[in-house]
Amino acid sequence: MQHRFNHQNRTMKRLAVFLAGLAAVSALANNIVVTNVTVLNAANGLADIQFNLSWDNSWHNSWTENGGSLMVTNWDAAWVFVKFRSSGGRWQHAILNASGHVATGGTQIDLGTNMLGQPVGAFVHRTADGNGSLNCAAMSLKWNYAATGLGGTNAVDVSVFAIEMVYIPQGAFYVGSGGTENNAFYAGTNSALPYQITSEAAITIGTNGLNYANNGYGGDLQGPIPAAYPKGYNAFYMMKYEISQGQYTDFLNFLDPGMAPNRFLNYYGSARNTISQSGLLYTCDAPDRACNYIDWPDLITYLKWAALRPMDELEFEKACRGPLYPVPNEYPWGDTLLTSMTGFNGLDGSGTETAKPANANVNLNGQISGPVRVGIFATATSARRDAGAGYYGVMNLADNVSEFVVTVGDSTGRAFINEPGDGNEWTSASTWPNNPNSYGVGYRGGSFASGLSLPQVSDRTSAMYWYYAASRSYCQSIGGRGVRTAP
Image (cartoon, rainbow, N blue to C red; front, side, top):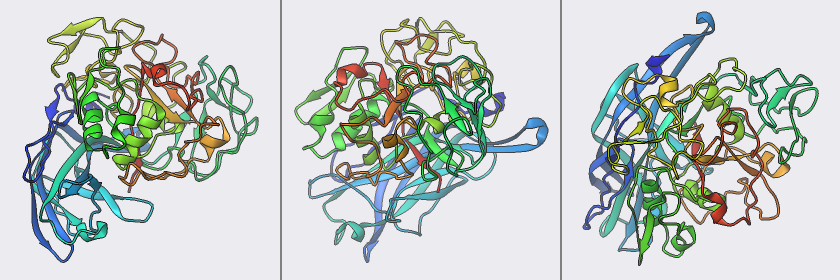
């Protein structure tokens, strides 16, 4: 299935941020660049935010599975959103207009809305099958600046952000592999039979539906999983990479200064974390390295700020295996073979370093003392196993840092619905688990510190493990990524 993985990047490039009247601020994301941001045609509460957007190794591919009976189409995209501030005040999230956007470079723009139906960002992606660098010159988003109370754009600073995402199409998939993973899902009374999710309808828990073991932190074995809980059947977007230290640093610098100190990780030099603070400015030494020490409150604040939402554990399994029937005890690339990295070729932290040995596809088992560059195993020609990639091209689902998910294992988790963040870090997302007296959250996937069982797709050892009051120090090997249900 190499045709799905010709998209992966090898280097980290600068995401330019435009601040009207100020110097550019460093903001990093894998191989994605925003330049030449200009605000034009401001009148009657609307303005055009024009910019150039580009990234390397983009793709839009179609292929068949199951002997040709199933057509699969997926692509990568940029989730683009805008922050602004007036007269040097607090940064706020821009509301876009419902129309008037201009896509260039063979792309289309799909708007993502908040719970009020207001556009808070845009997915930019190819419209036809193709692979390679994508260059969108002079594209623009129509900004509804009046929606946030602005009377004009004088003395207003504007910043454009872009995050690489992967489109995961609508369709049936399996949870559980029929293997020996801890607490894995299975169908009915047969622990060797994976359970197929075929719709977004409510799922019965127990011997007549979806079942799972209850060893250690396995869950309460109650149900059902309500219809409103996002099950992964409907199409959604997932961040291509784990949140990087550069992305988290930018987030800190654009937060309300009254909140940023509470979200500062403060573990510089520990387990390869390089984020530091000097006064009101946050910096990092290795911006392309996955961010660790992220606690659940840190993650949900980031996702609210970026107008994304948490992923749940069913979506995690779909992103790993796609529509294929599972291989028992498989890793996200569809088999049980892996090779841990032991070192680096090139300068560690430079953004161009690669892994030793050359066939490594995971950062696991304590070989490296912390996270490494996100997507480090992928090249322009690597196949799925070589890249350590999930079925659709999402990277590092098995390794580097474990990732927070909303669990189906207790009532707090099962109350979760498709509620995206609205771009405001102070807004409460009412159905996201956030109660210090309950669980609702766990993590999936292995990390640099874990052994070889957690990286198995269906291992649920820690699927409902996390307790909110725990210290951030327990998150040394934990990070996260965001998702958004497709428009």
